[in-house]
Amino acid sequence: MAEIGRTAVSVLVADDVAANRLLLRLYAQAAGHIVTEAADGAIAVARVAAGGIDLVLMDIEMPEMDGIAALAAIRRLPLGRAVPRVLAVTAHIDAAEDPRLVNAGFDGILIKPLDPDLLADTIRAVVDKGSGAGPSAKAQTPEVATGGCEFGEHSR
Image 1 (spheres, rainbow, N blue to C red):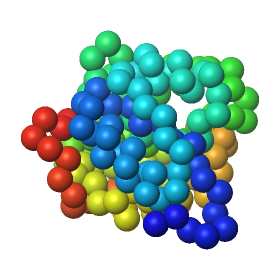
Image 2 (image 1 turned 90 degrees about the horizontal axis):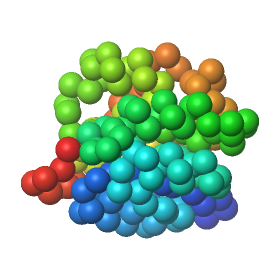
Image 3 (image 1 turned 45 degrees about the vertical axis):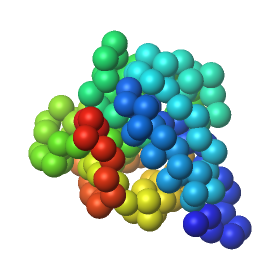
Image 4 (image 1 turned 90 degrees about the vertical axis):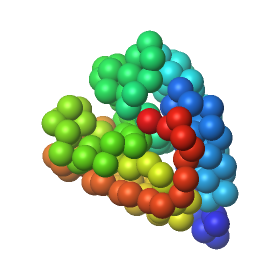
């Protein structure tokens, strides 16, 4: 549930699986946040470039442009202090040990399936660390959160 007195966060959900986007959108909206969606990394980069995004929930495995390439493109955008926080979202349970993810510059890693309360708490914690602070303000090793709500058979 949304916390009284807390500002809504503008969340971009980037995932090529429509069911995953739907669940993440519903979870974030239930926590009081404003949600935009992108079906691949290139669309996510364009939405971030347009401005107004505080946090990106970025699936790692997407066609056209994967989450790691999309994050690199987002970090290169001339956004100044408006750089959003970006959380990797993956079903790979060993993601915290994957050097590609750890070194890519994500602000955290979420392991599917996600619990709605865990997602709400993670969004708040990451944004409270300073939305728009950019990669230099975050820890070297991203935080990892795991949950327990089904995402469906075809999630990645």
